[in-house]
Amino acid sequence: MANRSRFQAARGTRDLLPPDTAMWNHVESTARSVFGTYNFGEIRTPEFEVRDLFARSVGDETDIVSKEMFLLEIPLSDYRSYIEGIELSGIATTDATFVVLYFKFCVEAVEELKKGRIPSSSNKELLERFESRREEIRSQLIDARADLKNSLEFLREIIRNIDLGEQFALRPEGTASVCRAYIENSLQQLPQPVKLYYMGPMFRRERPQKGRYRQFYQIGAEVLGGQDSPAIDAEIIEMLMTFFDKLNLKGLELDINSIGHKDKSCRLGYIEKLREALGKISSRFGEDSARRIDTNPLRVLDSKAPNEQALIETLPKITDHICDSCKAHYETLKTQLQLRGIFYRENWRLVRGLDYYMRTTFEITAKGLGSQNAVCGGGRYDGLVEELGGPPTKGIGFAIGEDRLILSLQEQAREAAAQSGGEASDQSPVTSHQPPLIFIAWMGHNTFATAVRAAKDLRNAGFPVEVPPTELKFGKALGQADKLGAQFALILGEDEVSEGMWTLKNLTDGSQIKLPEPELIDHLRTIGTPRRR
Ligand code: AMP
Image 1 (spheres, rainbow, N blue to C red):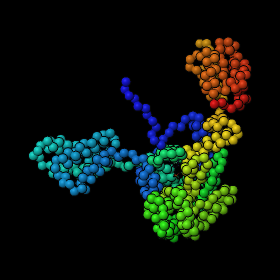
Image 2: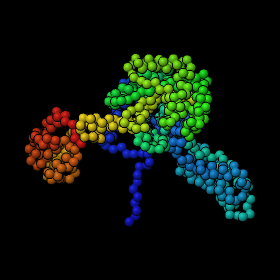
Image 3: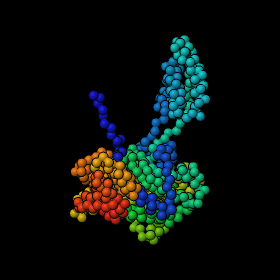
Image 4: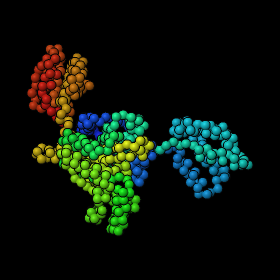
């Protein structure tokens, strides 16, 4: 027998299964409805984009871009780098071995072109030139006396000019794509600001742990264009809090900060002061933070290392060093939040890891998540659209980590069950709002057609229904219904079908009633009993 190994989901990815998926749908539909009331529309962008989009926006130096992106392969790029490497090393590349190497590259390029894996318009003519000399060069390769110099130059020229196409990356976040789409679809011509939300999978090659995955889901929103009034920042935070409120998620904490803007008079000036202060105590920091003092000193403030906390508290605080207009913006943001009855905590260490943020940054943490407790992060990013080739545009947005949000909701449901003395259950709270499941126990060959029709009518009326595909004995049918967690069994025997009087058995309390077929659905609608599971 062949040894068939079992496949497993890739590290850091997972399957989402019922009943949990009901919770996911509930979260997503709540987002749609709450965001809709703030007049946001949905945008769906591709799940992969040109790599440089993320490098330019999130930042080349960030962990996300430099270490964590899932990059898609570029055909022949390793091969070409290998050739370039040899040329750079100064080895004489004039003999036949190299012609073979170059020749083989071109042959493979022709194949890749045929398969449509490298761009056609830019390479077609070039590779046709190669094809026209292919046989001639091949015969030179088997002729020891042939002079290869000319062919070598010819092939080298082709390899240099071949266009292998752009590198793509699975998207690690959503904002860059939304900004790209804003520019590409000329959304600046619409009334401003444009308010968009999105939801879907994001990909980062991080070390997986509870609440941290390599494929995870975000629900995000962006406000692009128009003004940079702090009222917009406050309203987007209000929308978030309303969303969490509608999900009944308790114990959230909102941290806010202002990181100023990228200017000498503001954040850049602060970074210099910070670097100076850090330089004096750098030896007392661990390896990670010490490295960041050089590369990205702001990120030192993110450190969770226990022995670095007291040190960090001695550092200059960004909010004391931002420019007057950023300070004023921040002050108004706080008043705007108070006006909306939103509780916040000021956290001067909240700098966020992405390059594009300026002024307002915020983060929401939830309970029950251990170290990965941030469920949402966001901030203002005026200038990002321009950086990506669009017009000067204001922008602010957030991204909620849906996986963590759901973990937190489940944790809360478990705690509530434990406190009320009930059994801890991982039943998602939303399944209890579904209509009851009805199991159709049909017996006798002639009743099957009626069972199928009844199932269709019940399903049309919105009830979940199970019909066994083959006949089951009465006892077995009820056993099966019970296993599936059905609330009712609709019993259809030969007598019921011929009389038109159907039996409905309530599987929770054992009671049963007989009722005429046309009354069944109305009867079920009047009993709003929750579904068992
Ligand atoms: P960021 O895009 O890094 O600002 O992250 C926004 C939110 O996405 C975070 O607050 C998390 O809730 C969530 N998130 C980020 N990375 C991951 C991950 N690897 N796994 C699960 N959730 C994540």
